[in-house]
Length: 178
Ligand SMILES: Cc1cc2nc3c(=O)[nH]c(=O)nc-3n(C[C@H](O)[C@H](O)[C@H](O)COP(=O)(O)O)c2cc1C
Image 1 (cartoon, protein in one colour):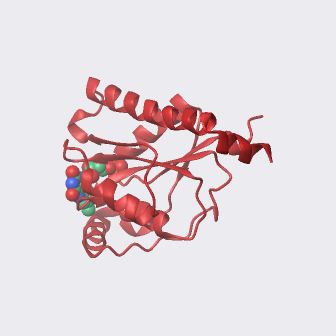
Image 2 (cartoon, helix red, strand yellow):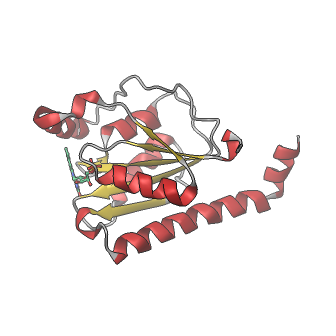
């Protein structure tokens, strides 16, 4: 059985299904496990308004989760929507929480807009306190098109390149020889 330290965890938040489909597709490509973030406050019509309001206020509380650490995984991919130009509040809540994360954290966002989610990536890196390993954003109208395949392909390449660098880095090899 594969050790958790070498496994990829995909933590997804999805209000209306776009990001969940992407998370499952990534999981298939990477043989990863998918963990859904618990965020009951944003369900239904009232939840929509609540989402927009909290996102604009940047009020990033995280509801209780089934896990208290994700550090046992080799790498983490967060997947979810853009809200008011930021990563959705449940994603930001996790990045800002004291839940331990692996060194490698990546972000795949879905959005209404097809333009790259530059502000959302900057915000996520500020919340995390360090650079993301790989990042991608996909507009709703580009879903299930060649653009989706291309974006997913370059995201996976970015991830693998970071993985190869880590293993080629002698300090990484030394650390793991201890
Ligand atoms: C409250 C709220 C705010 C949103 N703000 C933006 C935005 O600023 N820019 C954008 O491109 N899409 C925005 N969207 C659209 C979502 O990012 C997009 O539809 C996403 O794919 C939904 O993902 P999900 O189905 O996984 O929840 C917003 C959606 C919601 C609910």
